[in-house]
Image (cartoon, rainbow, N blue to C red; front, top):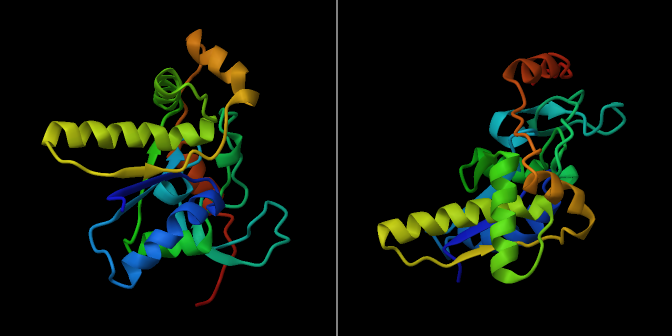
Length: 200
């Protein structure tokens, strides 16, 4: 069985499908030492920098209000090369697990993500999607930590897609044209001011 699970996360569906069967064992006490790590982009850090509040799932405010980690429904993502991870909120179940400290979350920059993707492609002969590369970045970092500490751990991750439609992004990375972007804290504050007022 894995010691560490790693998955990329945007809205939460890919990560949930991969991790939740293992999280169930953690919640029922079958395993106690499993680490589950959700990896999101620094450009859309909904779980690591968002607030755990009620918000709309869309900018038009047509969806029901749900309690989730959110950057605010008016969040406008930067044009990073991981389109599937640029959502303002996080799935309610993922958000609840994070609040209960059952899962961890980290945010990573775009360039180190592509560095990991290229390393993976050269080693495995498979070009990962930029979304999946977020998980690969953290897998490599965790493997290096294990090597440095002398620990033997089984690390599993979800390779959720190929990068065949992202060759332009890879070309920009290889040419040194890709920039890191961290969503500014003041923009988060501005978007959160538009949250619906809920009496609890």
